[in-house]
Length: 189
Image 1 (spheres, rainbow, N blue to C red):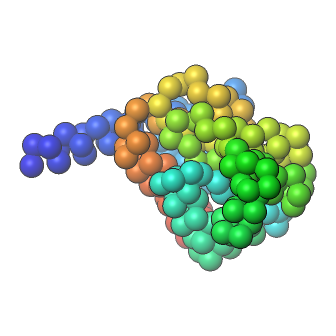
Image 2: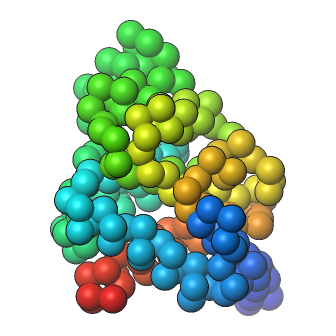
């Protein structure tokens, strides 16, 4: 039980110390941070603009799960970025570094929302997607961890940073936060 308690303690500490920023404003606490995210998503829900979730590995699983939940439960217009034929086509014809950026270049529009989920904030394909989103004048929510100066974090209009270098902890916090936000939206917050 000692190992389990230590893990839960590290998770709770990372969750408690997670930093939420919107522009130059840093949330004073977790609740304010969740409200920032709810506001960002609800803007796109009201506008009917499309939302794209992306991630690699375990973060891709979170992105896929959240794509379904934000579509079904949150009633947002979500576009999946994970069609196997599309990913393998773009990976083969361009490179894996371009599997998200090329999709955004081809289908996204100004004012839509890209949500990036990246433990390290350093993945090249995620970084290129962020640059493609910025070029299209899309809104951007970044969820990152590991180093506070990772290259994706600073580019978000709203950024969520988990101060941990443990993949499992960072992913668990990202998943919890996104799940809470969609549940709050579904409940009518």
